[in-house]
Amino acid sequence: MDLRTLILLLSTLTAVVMLLSSYFASYRVQRQLLIDHALESNRVYAAKLASITELFLQNALKQLAYSAHGLPGTLGNSAALTQETERVLAQGNAFNSTFVVDSQGVLRGISPAPLRGLVGQRLSSPGALEALGERRPMVSAPFISAAGNLVVVASQPIFAEDGRYLGYIGGSLYLRQHNVLEKLLGEHFYQDGSYLYVVDAHRRMLYHPDPKRIGMLIETNDLINQLHSRGNGVQQVVNSFGVEMLAGFATVPIAGWGIVAQQPLAKTLAPTQRLILDVVELSVPLALLAGIAIWWLALTIARPLWELAAGARALDLPDTQERIHKVRAWYFEAAELKRALLLGLKLLHERIGRLHQDAQTDPLTGLGNRRRLDFSLSLLQADDRAFCAIVLDIDHFKRVNDQHGHEVGDQVLRALAGLMRTCCREGDVLCRTGGEEFLMLLPGASLEVAIAVAERLRRVVQETPIEPVGAVTVSLGVARWSGGEQDPLMVLGDADRALYLAKQNGRNQVQVSEA
Image (cartoon, rainbow, N blue to C red):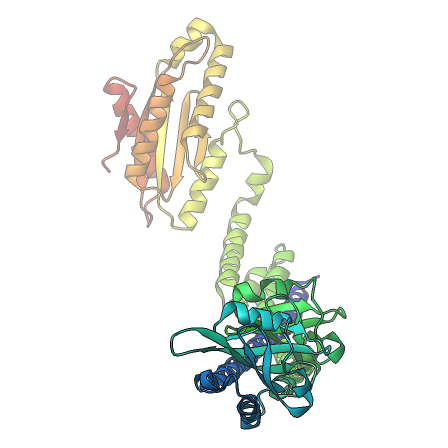
């Protein structure tokens, strides 16, 4: 498989993956936006209904408060009480019934007319007992009346001028019958399966689109569990039919009710399919244009490398160098490969005979030999790359051979080669050029770096005992070639002279050529 095919495959795969990723990301973003918008819309709607319900109940209590202010002098007048309850009931359509109860819980007046047969009875309903016990403006908890209605009572206490508690005036809301509250909560503006419900602080259902559920106690519902502690917010829930819903909720402080507006998740996400199809329709033509551009770029990028590869396969042909010269290497990697091929071709023609015949490694130490040194110098000169040369010699090595034998001497040479490897940099060239003579080439190194390397090697050799000889020392000479027309071999001569000076000055030291 050639580079052009690889580029095309990789580019196509990348484009497909990115396109699918963009589709998926678009879907996820649109999905989350729809969910967030629906949750926030339901929260705002629930909060608005809660605010309106709060205002409605406050107004209802104000109506009762106005009436309660004028009742202390008429509690014994049945006709006046009947007239007042009729007036409050007719003043608006807030209540299903209005009534006056004295401090003993006895019903003194009530409207509408069909209920007046109850006048004179002592009321024992939870709402009546709660109003008598609290003696303050309030909205009672829902309760089942004697007639079987689910009732909420709003009440205002009646006090005499001397502060005595005389009873209360109240208005009832039948939650299972039509009234203002039912119309307020029942006309939901969504038509997509959305609905709302209302529960009180005791988890009793006050309003639900399904009338059969009004009055039920809700035992298990995570949202209702948190409703009154959180006040208002949003949550994804599963309703009693197993349908995922997006719910927003708010509370009515005056009554302790919670209003929950929710809509089906599936209905909310229905537009995402159309959105994704629109994205696909818009992106496919652009993807085709991008594919054509990728194909053309792959051909353009691969052509220089393909031509260089063809030249590399035919290095033994006489016209290869000319063909490589004609390759239009218009970007960095291709230009470097072209330069390397031309340089390698030149060196190959000059050295191939000798490189095939001679080994470049000293068999005793594993370092390079003279041929390796010559080859490395040629490369550095061809690249016009500056380098430093370190020439070193073991001090009194003849004494080692005389006292311990040549086998031990060979061990010392091998140990020194190992120490040289530990002190050199990656890319440095290490050679054994004679019996106990060694050389290091440091391409690109400054003279200061070379001196530091030489000094480090000198100390390491001095401080490392070599059994059975013990510590040995080395003398080192350093020189630098800065490129240009100067023969690199002259630098080796400079390093040799520096080495000779080190030996003259007492050995075990580093000397630098001043040339």
